[in-house]
Image (cartoon, rainbow, N blue to C red):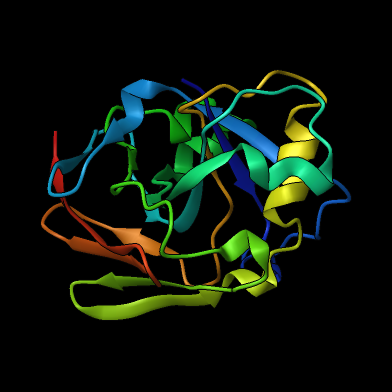
Length: 202
């Protein structure tokens, strides 16, 4: 499977990071070594001295395709998951590219797939919330996505084929913050439930 993450896709997050909105979707990859499920520990390595947690709605592909038309894009979606794009900012910015800072083992927790309870790509916006040790840190709506889900699928498949099981986290709203070992993080999205994990030192 492939994981195509989306950077800088909420204006509120772009502003808090001091960046400008991209003219096109900013896509980067994670590998399947980053994947863990609910309740598993997110392991913080010693090289990662500043780690942020980023709540995201993830799209799972159900049918493969290349050069998908935006009008037909949602026919290729199997369902949606809560996800967490964990990021070692010191390495992400120090390396001047994002592979290492976002690629550590356990740095992409995801929740169970939900296929019929929500329709965020069809106009029914959902709320994305992060709670750190019970305190709300992020709260945004998918109506604020700069590049909506159908546009992301069209854009990605100009370059490569999407296949069943591929994941597309769609970006994070404002409120990202540093975490430490022992912190408990919850990602909650309307209709998808709560993805909960705890951070632990390597």
